[in-house]
Image 1 (cartoon, rainbow, N blue to C red):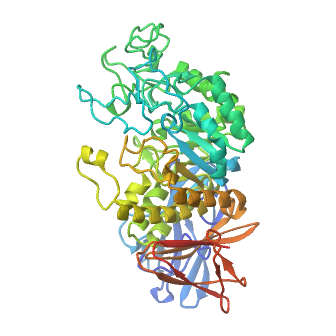
Image 2 (cartoon, rainbow, N blue to C red):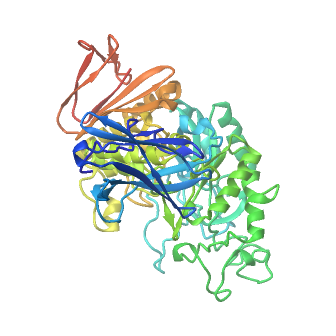
Image 3 (tube, rainbow, N blue to C red):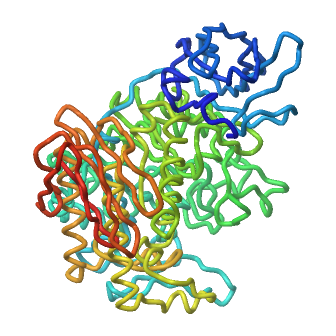
Length: 622
């Protein structure tokens, strides 16, 4: 803004407490214009979006502070969850004056206002945000034998070779149907639980595991059955029990906005013996879908005909998924899952998400609910509706795509100050529990592999070229160096560090399906894997990294440094994303500083630690 010392929403000198506040909490605001501007009055103007109410509060004049005049007001946050926007009005005794918003002083009313999130405090399980999450695409992680695809829903086929390229070319009709399978299974995941525990993993997030015609299984065929190629309900029970023995929770993917057209509910191809909505208007599932007219035309997810959209408001659907004592949400939690990640949360009504959370917590008070949202979830607008994901009745946390976006921009040559600003925006807008329960990641099944993103110097134009692309030795060396830095930040930042299977092993690939290759068992990048394992062990053993406070030390160009402080001390992450060595001096109270990743020791002088940080290098100092 044009006058940065008038108001700063992130400084305790101007606003306390920091960030989002509980319902009814008093918030103190201070505004400090220059004395020479001759303002004699100042007020806060709020627009409370959900209630539609405007509120103006005149601030008390506390008198001069040096060359400034201080105004102050303590304002009670709304009694109900709310999204409020505020700016200031300053005026003189003669009536002249102006407004103040995030851009500075202005005379018009096109305000860029500050945001105040008001939430209802509720219980958020600590195990998720404090721990390490491992994200598995089940068909591609580990197979113990080559399965048969005969007799299953969908025209499936199985790759004989584990290291084949996933099918990516369209069929003769020009469609990519995702019917090629590799045979990864739940038992295969169970067989690798010790490896995952050594990686520091405390949560396994599984892409959909229910019966489905496609390898990604986001077109659910039957919510009540494990897909036969993945195993049985007994295999699921074994996985959950053996994972719990190692301190690992299972997080399931809930795809509740749409089903598959080849499902027991829709049954477009008649695979199931019972009547689906596409076969009869007397089907118990007919009201789940919107036909216009039946049966040829119907609402579907983003117009994809194989993904008919459900009517979440249909009472029988709500009962089936949520309300019934043996509903899908409740049943799989009772069978061992510790929570749900909600696919396309933007396309689920707020009330529907709230009901899922109620059912989850009634079944397991320590269950976690994470939403797939690609933007700042505190102020997201979807389908012309401002969403309420984090205000206390819906999600505990969200997938943190803003973290990935800002981190990649920094590592690809952007300024560390931009990463800091992006993360402070999230920290300011989210309730603290939601900020610490964010699912942070470098990549997912919906994004290109992090090693390819950071190593490649271009993106080939054609899909055929992207399928054939492999990093050169120099590109791979650059990519690995930057992935190591990305992982260092990921594991030391608030929120659950989430590894997309194989990123720790050095897997490459552009967009789907090139990012969904099989895990390279026996061909891992052992050094990169060791780096992730060291970070995972530190995350699992140090409470400062799990739930410690965050403070910024440096964010300037290629240099980034921040601290986490908890009951077991203070740890400092230092990163240099540049191709040249960088120097950084920072206060240090101890006699020595040790890089917990390499064991290297540094010695401060007169309370100042001066570091020479290698090109694309970093430290975790304790």
